[in-house]
Structures are given as structure tokens and as C-alpha cells.
Image (tube, rainbow, N blue to C red; front, side):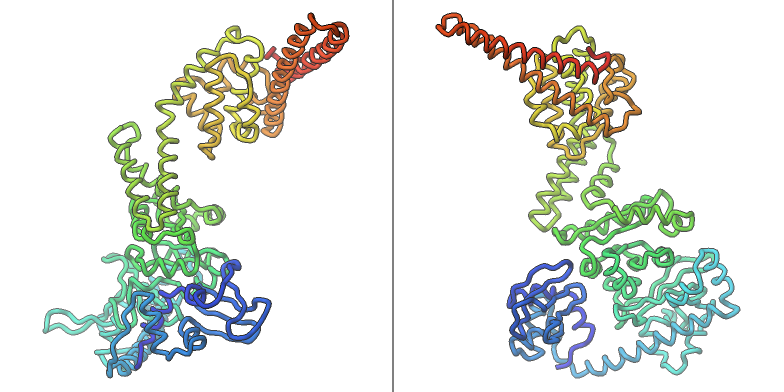
Length: 607
């Protein structure tokens, strides 16, 4: 039985090799590969590796090498066709029925490849001809070097109806039509014509680097701007990714693959040093293309244009991906400035900025929140309700249960961060600051506790590192206690809590900024001064917390001394107890005075 190479390639693409081998051999994760003791020979140290990205296994001990099909034929003795049928069942594919015309089609496919290679060479020649002058000028204007043009095989289709057929006259017209190079008009009295005319030509290659189709960009006026080959026996647009053959090896080195909207973006990125760039072919990313990307990179980076159309295209890719999202399969995003694409950014000198963005892309959850939140008026309660429902629907579309639960939790927390303060925390902070604005309203250590709470509002990271001490502080003023509890709770519930969020709370509460409030300005602690080195400010804030915590501990010890002295009045050993406790009280008071002096030094005018 003869099976087409296209079917076998598709079968290998849909089969995760480690899942096949893992049923027979215990595998251990080793970076981007798996390792095990070789099932083909006896060994104690693992030398057998499985690479899902490349789709093959290899033993460095005995040299065994192959794919999923050969593994089943070698380990279980299955005939080739039986191994194929077993893998096809697991991949949800139907093995084609025997077809006596299969060999003829395979031979024709080989001939079509010859046609496409010949057409690619002819388009390259036309670019170098006088007719290609305008296109060469366009490429020069776009900054595309000769080296890059040759690497991508760029060409030119002249504005003529029959020149390609004349140039490729060794091939029958029917073959040129089947290859998608010549179109047959519907009107019977009109002659066939070249499909691509007056266009910059981009050859589209399969994963093995063979030309299977073309994409042409119009030079001058005309529509459509880009024209792709129709589907042919060689080319399926939804199963092909532009530049995938060149980008895949580069992506294994850079540990990432970058998805952009168009061919010119790919070429511009490649020329700027980002060799791992690919593009879909004018349509939304398909499920099959996502699988191809995930085999190379667990988290492909989508870098679409910064305009509304670009963001919608990114969102369409997300919607296709959500049912298949897993902990090992996600997406990341880099957003271009409004009205710009990667090519624009590079040509304006933004290569370093792009590199920084690619090194730290936006996560899928952050992109979804940003995209969905941008669709509503945050002041409108109906819109906020729509956002909450939409986020729940998005999370619900994720197929993996663990990912679905975690994304739902993340969206709820982001929603609370964005809108929860408005109702509860803002009212509380307004009341707390208003009640404690006058220093005369507070007594004893509460004055310093208030200072610490204000300092923690500027450096909330300290809350988490000193949570136990802060939570154990004895606070006389109820509002200060509630304020303390709020900060401790927020630090653990909101990992991204920062000073800007606290400032937002103050602004929403119609209070001036921390540096301008008189009630803040009368405190001389370093952690209130704008120009203080953050390390010094945090050090002084932690020292103040330590000092107050110790001072309160001394107060408890002094209370213990007082109780012991009261008990000693009726004791036969009154004099010795009195002397001992009096000495202890003296020591405690001296230490308390020392701590008070330390607070004076830390707080300057805060006494």
C-alpha cells in the first residue's frame, strides 16, 4: 500500500513522539528533550534521547535513530502499515484507502515541484531585469539588502498576461494551472493568464525548504495588496507558515519563535538579527499552524501591529488557541506602537527596544486582560459587568482544567485590583488618614505606628517581608489597626502591589500626594523624602519597625515588673524581690529611653 509523503508528514506532525515511546520506556525530562535508558540495548546510564520538536529519537550508545513509525516497527515488530494505522488512530486521522492512482499523483507532485522551482528562478531573473527596476527601487527604499533578497528568493512578476507560460513552455499548460501559476478565466473566449502580474514575489516553502507556492505584493496601485497562490496539491494555506523552514532551526538556538503579520515584517526582523520570525499567510492563525509553532516553542510570541486591526488579529489567534492551551502550551505578545508594524519600528531605529520587548513579552493572561478591559468604559457599571462576564467566558474556553481554573482566578484578581479599591479600600483610607491627620489626636507609640504605616504605603514590599512583626504591633487607634490589616492583607493577596497603587488610592480619595501633605511633611523619616535612596529608606523603615516592636515588648516586660512588685508586698522575701525587680525595671527603662532616642534620630521632627 502506497501512502503519500504529505499524509506521513501530517501523521508525524500530529504525533507527540514522547507519548508513543513513553508507553514502552520510562522517560525523564531533560531540558527541551527526554532521556531514558535505550530500549534497543542494555545500559545503566541513559544515552537514549527523544526530541518532540524534531520528531526523532537517537541513542548515543548504539546509534538507534528514527521516528514514531520506526519505533513501533523496531520495538514491537509491527509491519509498516500497521504502525501507521495505530498512530493514525491516536492522531484522529483516517488512513487513505488503497488507490492505484496514488503513484501517478506522487509522480505528478514531483513534477509540480519542478514547475514551482522553475517559476521561482524565473521570477528572480525578472527582478534583475529592466522590468524589475521599480521593484528593486521599492526594496532599496525599504532597506532590504541584496543578501536578504537572495536569502528569501525574492523575485518579480512582470505586468504581462502570458510571459510566465512562455518562459516555462517545457511544462504543459495544465500543470501550470494545477500549480496555481496560471488562471483560467470564466469567459470561454478569453485566454489563460498569469495569476501574478506587476508584483514583488515571495516564494513560500514547505518545512523542507521546497517552493510550494507564492505570495505577491502589488507594486503601485491595485488590489488586493497581497495575493497568495490558491490551494494546490502542494500547498494548503492553513497548514503552511511563511519562513518556517528557516526560522525553526534559528528558534531552537534562541529558544523562541516570533509570529508577525506579513512577509515584509518577517524579512525586516530577519535582517535585523531576529532569524526566528514567521508569518501566517493573510488569514487568522489556524489550529494546525498553532501546533506547528508549539512543536518549536512552548510559548510563541505574537507581534502584531499596534492598531485595532492588529490587536483583533492577535485576539483571533488567541480564540483559536484557548481550547488547546496547557501549562506547556501558551502564547505571549509584544505590542507595537499605534500605527506601526515591526518593519516601521526597525527602520526608525527601534531594534534595541524590540529586542527588550521580545526578551520580556506580555503573558497570555495579561494580554487578555488588557484587550478585554480596553473594550469597556470602566466608569460604567453595565460595562464592568460585561467585562466580568467576558473574562469568565474566556477562561471557560480553555480546555485544560488547571489552566482554566488559574486563568479564572487571575481574571478575578485583576478585576478586583482595577475596581475593588473604589468601593472599600478608598473609603477606608480616606477615613483613616482624615482621622489621624492631626498629630495631637494620637498618643504614645501610635504616633510612630502611623509613621510606619505611611512609610509602608510608599514601600509596600516591606509589608510582606516583615508581616509577622507588623501584624503583632499593638495599636491603640482602631482606624490605624484596620489600616495595618489592610496593608498586610493586600501584600499577600496582590503580589504586584506597589507604591503607585497606593498613590492611586490616595488620589481616588481626593488627597494630595504623599510628598505634599502637611501631615506627612512634618515627619522627618528618610522613607518620606523623595530623593532618599530606596535601599536607605527601606533600611530605616525596617529599623523603625524593629524599634517600635521592641519598645512594645519592653512595655509588656514593665507591666510584668509592676505585677511582681504588687505580689511582693505580702511576700516574706519582699526585700530581695523588690531589689531584683527594681533593678530590672531600671534596665528596662534605660533601654526604652535608648529606643526613644533612636526613634528621635530616625524621625527627626517626629517626636
